[in-house]
Length: 289
Image 1 (cartoon, rainbow, N blue to C red):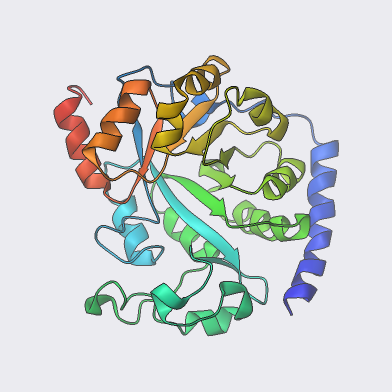
Image 2 (cartoon, one colour; image 1 turned 120 degrees about the vertical axis):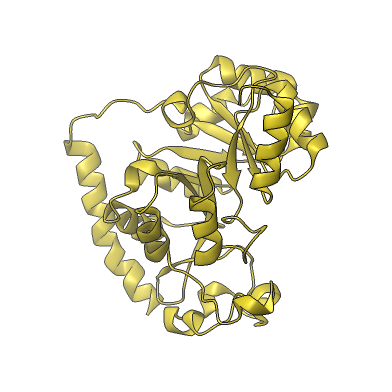
């Protein structure tokens, strides 16, 4: 079933490529268009809620996303997408369902209907028992009621037809202008670049090379997302990215020490599990924010 849907998506791929080749350019998108002015050392970074607001609700669920959308501290809401066995984009982080749902299978091994029967809330707290795994479509529909930007990670390697499935959902959501896609996978980033060159994209990377700009340019990304250790070990790399007009985000930072380290270097955004705590810390330590 998944194979059939992926093959059907090949038609979407061709349509996307035709649109890219035949449509007039809508102009280049810059990091500052998405993040605002790039930060200087000591400037407050913007806040992205990791898998929603998992400090108050189970990760990657509609309650967590609703809390994030309604939290004025956050400018971005982050989530993860994987394909079900029958080709439906579902929001889930882990490689298996064991930790969250108690099932020793992956998202890709189960159909949309099977995934929808799983309880992904009880692991967090009994009052969330019966909470279901949302699809990408449900997440984007909820986002339409708010004004937050959306940071969506494509987990693992995605083929061009698989990428096309996600792009089609985004295109029909009405909130595509607020979406930024990200991935650790070079293959996925290359396919996103081919299928949707005008969509803002971010490369996730655990360590920074001395000069990451050529790599970022080759993949057409607007920013890199990395660890606090990566930027503290290679502050010159962050400086080169900013000089090239490229943004830098850090994940997943939940302590005042890590927040202070990256703010001192001028990181543009912080992905965190504790957005309200980070907002309070920024308000206390960065007057005027």
